[in-house]
Length: 538
Image (tube, rainbow, N blue to C red):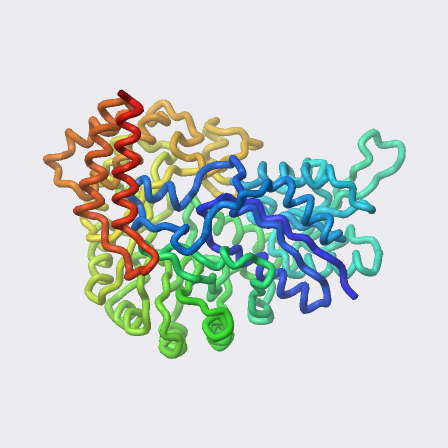
């Protein structure tokens, strides 16, 4: 018979990729005979953060697009009314909250709203995700959370649902911290049972992800100025690299400490092929999104197997990888089977700083040479950069600008470093007294940053980010003008808007062919917006 599970996914408009973990859990639980529903806030007005992809357009980081051309807009209903309606319809036996650190506070707000609805019986709530894994001591303190999943959730959810269905004690579920009732003499009778972590799951035993519970809008995402029907594809779980701003090193450490199995795993290519065919033939996918942290962490045999499989798919696709993982052979092969765009993590332009602080040990010369390869084969690419690291200065940030000027990238971005829980640099920031262990960090409101460093204060970070793409693409004889545009005052913003318009016309790559509108629509919209802003100032 099974139980009814309601997943809660707090999210904001503009963060468009469907969450693959929930789609996988849905498939797993349905296979076990359970019912699954999802409450996803992506298309509600949540007053949390900003439109993530929309913000990238404003900062000239992506080719402009318009989701509304495909009928995708915010809902006009209240999320509070909708979540009450969902609870009434589903009458769940288990609430499952999946959150990032960005969305933790929004997730708690949703749970508080749910609590107002009087469900017949006490329904346990489990919280999982990256934030729960690396900050379980924060999550378990929330009174509305009964169970925290630390690590992967496949085995934990299956075991938990089975025990709830049988109405037996679930305090021993693997990978979980579980609140139990202690002796009467304890003032706070909540006792936390911390269960051990099981070995990493065999990802080759997992079924194809289930998207039936998501609304159709969630299957669309912008890429290169075009909005495609797109789904995430898993080829690799984990990452073999140890970048200190990422959670991969702590993930590896966690599993090495708790189990004798490594966290980095690869999916069999025949299973990837089966999923790709299903997406194309049964779901009408137009574009594939391979979400591995480092897609080309493959040996030659694995790579050639992928090329053979994808040659039958005949759809454009996107990957992300590191510059050192590409060569002419790989790029030529990938381009021949449909690679449309790719992203490279460069992160910082100063070699010594990049190696010492980020553990990225590769020379600028080699990066520059590698990033000449994609365009040889007609592949568009973007470069990801970060600023606002501990010990960084504005002068060092200009090294990132100088390095990016050596690339002929189609897009480049500069985001503010966010010291998320579960990253080595979080620990560094805590040790330096830049942040408290309990502080929740967010990247959605990252313009000012969360670190107040005397050598690189928040306003300087914001200025560099505002004009990063202008510095990268305009000739250096325009830099004095760009420096004035950094300032957030009437004159600075006027100069910035004029430079932005020039940038869009001269340097923004044309979008992929899109009958739904793209760059031209955005330029016209931006001109109207600028005119209204100038009128308001006068």
